[in-house]
Image (cartoon, rainbow, N blue to C red; front, top):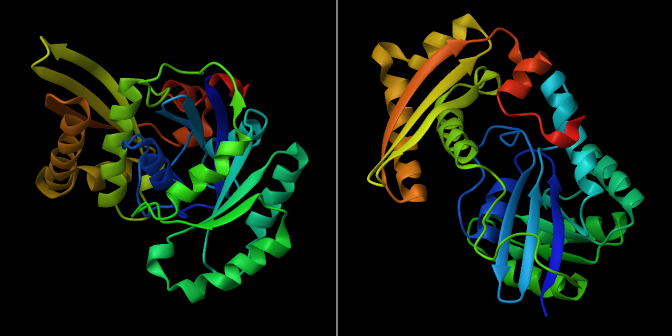
Length: 298
């Protein structure tokens, strides 16, 4: 008898949603960085444990949209709620709910689905310091459970799965048992490269960056050729991305290649180019061309 559950991972930027997704799935399928809104589109992670399959939908962090891409990201959060059986509301131990979190909970309430609150980064605070946040959450919403967790160390994850068990329903699996994600290999590669750019670049540049894979071919299973174009939305950013004497781009390439080889299990020949597409985040056709528009965004 197989059981299935679809879950949305929701919360503000930088609370660790993508790190949590990677922890739950057991593989790095989502980009992680300290920059806000690292996640741009909905990412599906799949974990199959025996007769149980968990389908996690990671969403962009909730912020007021500043451009067309931001509007699309907010829409993805809304549409995801209609596709799941349960929501994982991820927050931090900050003592009280923030306004965007209150608004998000109000939207979740409309869906009438179970919600589990996860207080992430519990490894960074003492246990007594988490108590005010537990109390604030308990007063704000009728959560099915409130669990301190650490996406970094795995603390609290077993307790989460215990809470999910009674919420699962008998159903055929949505994915093959060995599936990790619905993302294509090209998308995974582009996200690994973009993650390294987010870590390397100053605050003014990262959100104007898109990575498009133009070549993805394997040489008899021994060498994977990946050619990627890094798009900037301002001409002044191109030199920053390349760096003095090409140093920054070279470092990004080295670090991205390490992740790519570890994930795909073969040597990678990685080529990177930098081009400019002015204000692409406000141009729907380019958002679609860059693979950041889902079929359900219509």
